[in-house]
Length: 393
Image (cartoon, rainbow, N blue to C red; front, top):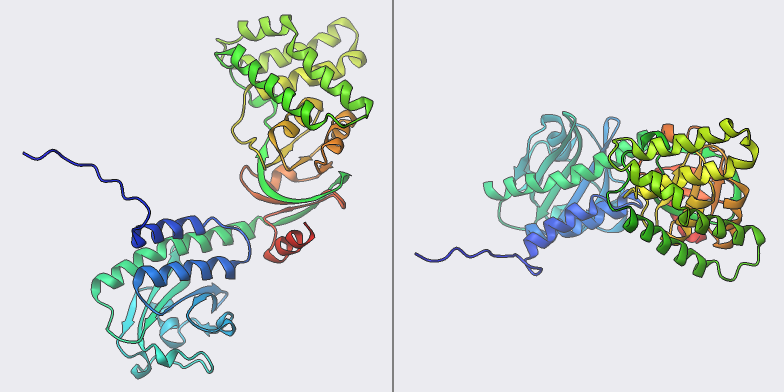
């Protein structure tokens, strides 16, 4: 009996590579025409055809938003739902194929397109939420599409449908918000949400390792801010260092490690302490520092390099960690502490505060455009805004 062999399909299999590339492209940002045309490039190679077109339903019309094989003027070609064979695909919500499209009664020529040179046709509906949101069309010069090819074309429509659905969902939640600009700079990135203390759970089991990570953050931030001569920046770094050396705080965190809401409880204790001692004003900064330390100890995965960190409020520890971890901007629905602004300015990290409705619109992973010169925050910006931002950068 032969021994079973596990085969890893490495790069080089054009079909497998192409399908994986389609899935990858479905998540790309930028103009929809660019994304869908890139998907058409892959579809042509996978299916062995000369022409691939993606029509997107816009109201009662089908508009070509992606193509491989026709000239650049083909983008924007419009058909009514039910018009031509492509419109028939959308109307009946089933795949339609033809060996000679021009000979069919439903055929409607599009002047200047040149599709008569590619008479063999198959169109598959792109269905989302029970309705047609587009049509994928494949064409070639000879050989009628076999049943298994129609099946494959229908399957390949899935990542194209995903790409269109993602854009439609993004468009629903697109917004232009306005806040206060503090540090200039225009950036584009994914939202990483800094959790509030009410969302915190138990401290990490290995407290010492968690503190070691924060010491590494402090070390990286100190290197990046080494050229700053602003006193507030040095004071902020000192505050971070002193908090990491607070043995009493570390003992409390260790004691809370077995509690489901341990980090939250420690933050609450420090928030109540100033009122008990009658030193609210003097201890306000320390309370904020402890709260942010607890947030950083939780080590949320959403706070990744290159992401735009959004929070209710931002104090110095979050600002220092953002600099250390390579955040691209800081955005707050409420205030940003002056010391945090000083740290961000020294690192050339754009900052916008007092953004109303920020958490009503933005969610983890959403695409954001932040303009630190004007205070504008765009949630799922339009392709034209993305291109303008990229040119500005």
